Amino acid sequence: MTTENDWLTRRTGVLPTAPPTERRSPKSVLDEATRPTAPEPPPEVTFTHQGRYAGRHLVDVHDHYRAELRQVRDILRQVKEGTSQIGDARDQLNVMTIRANDWTLGGVCQAQCRAVATHHTMESQGIFPHLRRSQPDLAAVLDRLHEEHLAIHEVLEGVDAALVHLARNPTDYGPITEAIDLLTDTLLSHFAYEESQLIGPLARHGFYPGQV
Image (cartoon, rainbow, N blue to C red; front, side, top):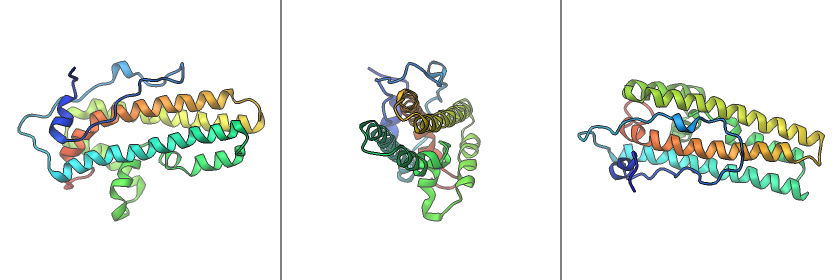
C-alpha cells in the first residue's frame, strides 16, 4: 500500500511516526480530514547528510515529548492509586518541556540549536518564516500547524484547569482523565502530521538559513 508521503522515507531516509490508531477521547480539537499537504519536491532536489539530520531531529524531539506524555499519564495513574499527591503532579507537569514550550515549533528548534544557546523566542519566530520563505508551497501546511499549536495550547490549559478541579474535588477524576485523554489524542495526531509534512522541508532547508 502506498501513500502520498512514500517519497519522504525513500528520499530522506527518515521515517515519520505513524498517526495513532487508538483514540481515548470522544472529542477532537483538530480538523484532521482537511489538513493540507505539501507536494513532493522535484526530482532534482537532493538532501545532504546535514539536512537528513535536521529532519531526523524533529522525530527525536517529538520522541522526547511523547515520553513526557507517557509520564503525564503515569502521574495520573499514581494520583488515582494514591501514590502521589495532586500538588506534586501539578508541579511535575508545569516543569516539563511540554508546558514550557507552549507547543510552538520553537521547542523543536530549541533542541536543535541549544548548542549555540539561541533564545527560545527568537527560535520559535524564525523557523516558520524561514520555511515559508524557502518553500512557498508549504504555506498552507504552516498555517495549519500554527492553528494546531494554538489548539494544543488550549488543551494544555484544559489539563491545568482539570488539575485545579481535582485539587478541590480529590475524588472526582473524571475531568482530569478526560483532559489528559484529549491531550494524548491531540499531541500524537499533531506530531504525526507535523513529521509527515516538515521532515522533508527541514531536510531540504534546515531549521534556519544556511544550515544545509
